[in-house]
Image (cartoon, rainbow, N blue to C red; front, side, top):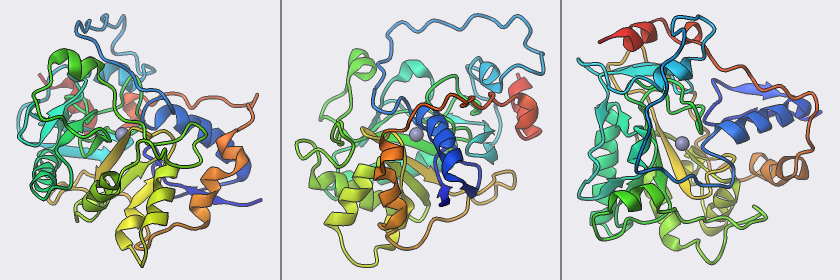
Amino acid sequence: MFVIKVDGPGSRARHLLSAFALLIAGAFLALGACGPALAQEKGTLHPKPLPPLANPHDPRLPAKDLFARALKPTSGPAKVIGFYAAGCLAGARPLPWDGDAWQVMRPSRNRYWGDPYLLSFLENTARRAKASGIWPGFLVGDIAQPRGGPMLAMHVSHQVGLEADIWFRPMPDRKLSMSDRERMMSTVLVRKDRLDVDPKTWRPADLNILRFVAKQPEVLRIFVNPAIKKAICRETSGLRPWLGKIRPEYGHISHFHVRLVCPPGQPLCRNQFAPPKRADCGKSLAWWFSPQVLHPKPNPHYKPRPPITLAQLPRACRAVLGAK
Ligand SMILES: [Zn+2]
């Protein structure tokens, strides 16, 4: 039985799983990584508040139900607490909806909050990519909730304010209306059979922006669809240590997911192990195109992992959630 490591947005550490367990993990990540595997969801111009919880102090309550109802960040200094897929964020700041080289998409989701380290990274990288003619500006999707933590839908990670989704659709040269931001769709770069990129949409600029972002020292990983990594492997050559940071993952056909390292001076932030400092275009990438991954058989014994509770997050997250 072969083994392989799971390195997705939701993985907490290096895991070795049997082929059988991988099917389970695959189903879990497919649902949880970054949106439904092949669909994009529109936002709304009329967001409705969530109904109040009958018993918000029930210890069995999924933490996502609590964090989704925290509509404002805590005041005070920013603190990154815990791990990308099990943590929270104090003192979050909003990414301004309109920048000179970026615009926030789907603002109705209220997920444009992050640690200042990530926000300045996004702003500076977007400006530099624009100034050098690599990319006209970022359309930024989900970052994190006002207090971080687990989300009701679409992501396993994005919990500590150090991750952002950036659309493969280049920013248009105009200020987007609210309707554009909620209803516009990103560009899908992957063919329907998921075996390769779509030659109708995949352009040199896509490779250039991914390489540019991956080369930034603050970037720990970038998650893209395996077909996109395959195309980059084919279209570049040499040792390419930056390409090791570009990790294949379910979904991610219309955006890339950037994960930064823990910022300096954040003792409660838990870093993830570094990816290999080589292209990593071999066996582990080929695995994604095997029949059991592309077309998994339904597993009658599959049980979704129960959602995490507040008790399973770092202790400091209770204070973050409870703060006025
Ligand atoms: Zn993401």
